Image 1 (cartoon, rainbow, N blue to C red):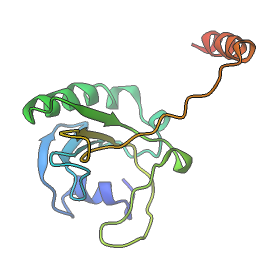
Image 2 (image 1 turned 30 degrees about the vertical axis):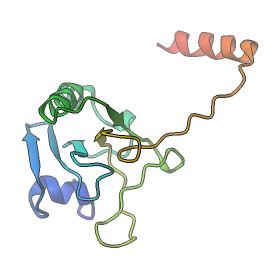
Image 3 (image 1 turned 180 degrees about the horizontal axis):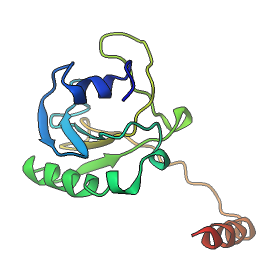
Length: 144
C-alpha cells in the first residue's frame, strides 16, 4: 500500500468510511462526494493504478459485489464505472483539497434515480473505417 494513497488509508482504517462490504480482496464503501444517493466505491485491496496492474485473483469478487450493492440499494437504473488513466478521467482527489494522489483502481456503482441525479454521459460515436476496424480486430484477436 502507498502511504499517501487515500484508498490505502481508508482500507487500513486511518480514514473512516461507511463500509458496506469487506473481504480479504476488496472494500466497498459509500462515496462521500456522491453523484447520487447510494453512489458507492468498490476498491481492490491490491494497490494498482490501472486495471491491468491488478492480479486477476484480486478482481474476481468485484462484479458480484457491485451486483449485490445494486440489489441492496434497490437501484433500478445505475451505472458501473471504472476509469484508467488521466485522459480517461481517472482522478482520485484528496478529500477536502485539490491535491492529486496516486491513482488507484476502483469501481463506482452510481444509482440513476432520475434524469438530473447520477452519472451524465455523452457518447461521441464516430464513423467507422471498416479497413481499420478489421485490422484492429485481427491484431487484438491474435493477442487474446
